[in-house]
Amino acid sequence: MKNKIRLVKSRIFKTIEKYKLVEEGDKIFIALSGGKDSTTVLFAMKQFIEEKGIECELKAFHINFCLPISEKVQEVIEQQVKLANVKLETVCVKDLGIDIVKIAKKINRPVCSICGVIKRYLMNKIPRERKANKIATGHNMDDFLVFFFKNFLNKNFEWVSKFKPKLIATHPKLVTKIRPLFYVGNKECEIYCKENGIGYIAEPCPFAENKFLAGRRKWYEMLYYIEKFQKDFRYGMAKSIASASRFFKSEENEIKECKICGEPSSQEICGFCKLVKINGKIG
Ligand code: AMP
Ligand code: ZN
Image (cartoon, rainbow, N blue to C red; front, side):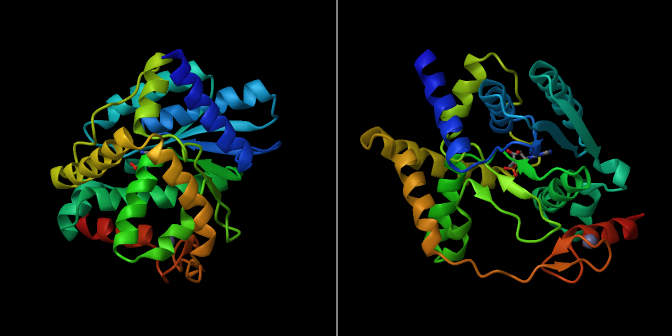
């Protein structure tokens, strides 16, 4: 097992070095959900800057959705940041006057889609307001491969251009996104957390629909099944797709600024402000 942890660590370190995910003088926010992936990002990045002696600042960031499970998640995250010796900033959506369950009922959409809009918005706005230049997330190799196959099957090639460990900001109000787990998947993150004795939330979000979870599990099973016969299938695919991503041009949607809040958006009014408006109508 020790060898396996070493392999996971070495893959993450190589990704950080090759794509310059961490540079001197950076201020990096690490988006923590409490799950194994973002937990791995927190500890591996901390280990990286300590071992390499890089002068940069790491700060943990959590969006608390104020749902029944949120207290438990918050507790686990507070233990993680204490162990990693990294400061934590938490934003509670209730303090922003938002109730995602009520909004979901009102517009008859899954809670997950509301949660996604809020996450994308706050994961850019808060780090930028705190003068961070990068945000690190726990999107892992298996997630990217599943996205890749699904999008490729639907002839949605544009998405492939975003299949990279680093998405450099294309607007002054956007923060560069980094994905240190681009070459490690679910199995590897589980090994990293378990073998290092780091606690995390293992159960899926209670609001995730069973149909969605079963669909994703099916894709993961297919990837791991192929890997039984083809050594390093997932790693090989991720490397090939990352290098092919330059052939897929992204149709750069013009980035505007939301007329209400001024945050970057492809629409006149951003998704977040639309939700806030709906929330206001519920009262
Ligand atoms: P997900 O969208 O749930 O697949 O999560 C993708 C990544 O977004 C995670 O690995 C985290 O880095 C980040 N993330 C998810 N949920 C939260 C949250 N509540 N607060 C902060 N970051 C989050
Ligand atoms: Zn807005």
